[in-house]
Image (cartoon, rainbow, N blue to C red; front, side, top):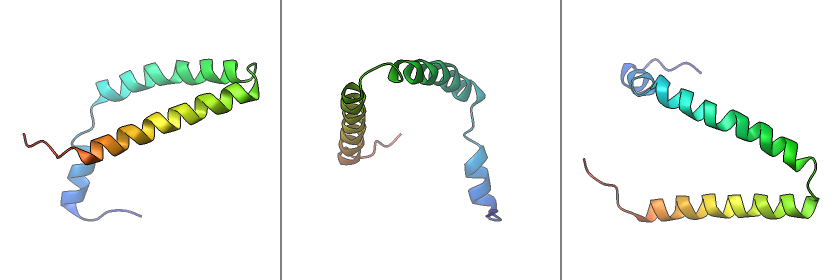
Length: 73
């Protein structure tokens, strides 16, 4: 669905920073390949525990950041 609102369109594309996106891709793609390689050889119980730990940490971080008041800059 295309957005025709000029304010929303500028908010969508003004904050795009190629350096940040590039750094994220450079860091994440090798990690995904490494984890895929390791997970195919690791026992299933280890993978399940690691996945649960990552999901728990992500949820806790989201919960803590939601509790903090927004900083005004």
